[in-house]
Amino acid sequence: MVLDLDELEPIIEEALDKVRRNLLIANRMGKLEDYLGILGLDGLIQEEDGDSFSYKNGVIVVLGGSRVSENVLTGIGRSCGLDKDRFEFCLDYDEIESYPFKKLQYNAKYRVVLVGPVPHSSRGKGDFSSTIVRMEETPGYPRVVRLCSNDELKITKTNFRNVLTDLIAEGHIAC
Image (cartoon, rainbow, N blue to C red; front, side, top):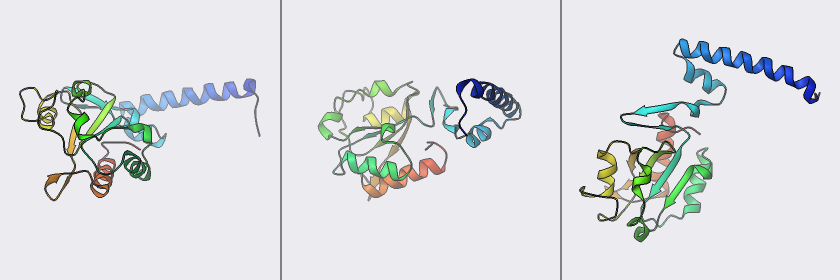
């Protein structure tokens, strides 16, 4: 059955009123995140982390020189249930030196930064030993996860998939 707009409008209004009431009740009971999850909207809640916040469905930044192509990494992300638009890549080792790291600070758009090999001296490091340490130790940056293989920074298909899977499992990022 297909309703015309005049028939559908009162149904939409009643459904919205019921959802609004249920959201208020769930919030009062401390169950808002659970209710949003039922509706498939669990990425809407802001998660506070110290001096910054971001959304669980925010952008995943991938920085570091890599032999694994952006297309392959995007495909791995898709296989984990993440849309390709969720990713921002800077995989050229030389381009990382001029990457605008400051844009990540206090920016709710960015959820996590996955880091592989990066130059120690880049425009964004300031007085820190590296840009990675700056992001890890300065308030307002998204969570930083180092991609390592054999105890060295390296972006591989395996560690990329494992980190995404872990971040999804712990609820830090939403699909």
